[in-house]
Amino acid sequence: MAFVCFMRSFPGRLIRIIAGGALVAVGLFVIKDLGGLIVAAVGLVPLSAGIFNFCVFGPLMGLDFMGNRRARAH
Image (cartoon, rainbow, N blue to C red; front, top):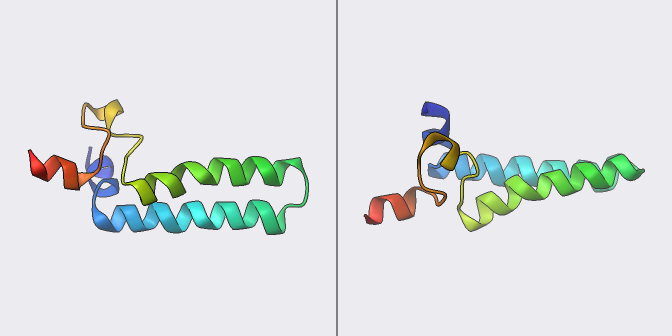
């Protein structure tokens, strides 16, 4: 539960953006075959989660899908 709470926080959001961007970059520029495209596609999940502020692990732990900003509004 602490992991999900951290990932829903602002530092967790930054980590998702950085990790997703790194996966996309590695997939597109380092790995030059079909595996690279798969890595880049997988990297889009944490990248978009960080940019749009949603947490894919939240519902698995009984929390809201959106990040902390929406949770604090209620």
